Image 1 (cartoon, helix red, strand yellow):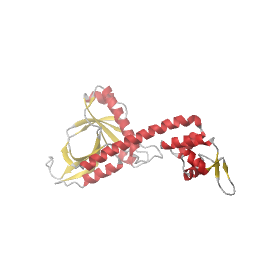
Image 2 (cartoon, rainbow, N blue to C red):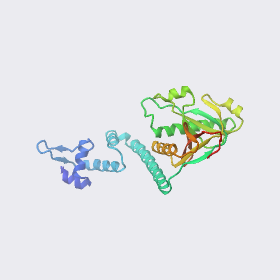
Image 3 (cartoon, rainbow, N blue to C red):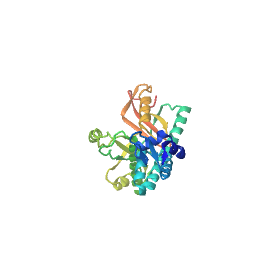
Image 4 (cartoon, one colour):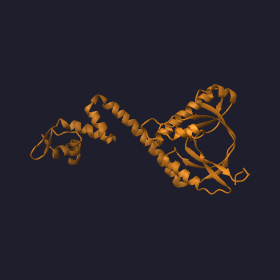
Amino acid sequence: MLSISDFSQMCHLSSQTLRYYHSEGLLVPACVDEQTGYRSYTFDQVEKAMLITVLRSTGMSVKVLRLALDEPDTALALLRRHTVEVQQARQEQDESISDAEELLGSWPEPTLRRTTAMTVVSKLVPGNLPGTDRHDWAETRTTVAVTIREVAEAVEAAGAAVSGAPWRAPAIETDEQKHQAMTTDGPLWLVKVPFTGNRPALAAALPPGMTVQDVPPFDEVSIRLPGRTTVAKYASALSRLSTHPLENAFIDLSRIREVLHEDHVETAIAICHLDEDDSLT
């Protein structure tokens, strides 16, 4: 038998760590003295301690590690799933570092612009599933991306071509959408995909749930933020845009949209003019 001190030196694990592993049921001592509480280990447990150390060094949680130890046949699959999660986390961290460098180098400022007339295909983004967070933006990004891909594929299958960056906007174009957006199920968003091609032919070929809309030119104030959209970036963009000075005009918050690019997102809000001059001031 090995005392906790000897076992600690042999495995290069502190006594505190061994006590923690004991309390979590990961590495239970071979013997615990009822009177003194002293823990003793066997040489056979060195291998298990080594395995625990290796798995913990990957960043695997205690919960997953316990499952891997209790069900050895699942250990490799659990490790592979953990590896994917780590790689995703590293990618997100790299992207965040890149975003931070760009923001610190030159903070973006709002700009005024006039859009051109567009014809788009519009589709509601499926609402959140019951029990999920309606403000889970990671889930929203995924669902929006899937919806945009579906629309783009339908456009191309009908012989038309995507002609610009897609965007998402709050699903509040109709009274029904406004009512649904207030529920936990949604849908909360619409996606718009610009296209060029035969409008009547495309409208006839689109699957249910997709509609063709004509978008006339309009003025808007926009701001570009690097990387993917997050609730923090959305709130920051909204703050900048809503306080941007305008002459004889005001912003229409019901017409906010996020234009989605590969490496950045533009948040834009339509401008309503107080006079008849429809040009940018």
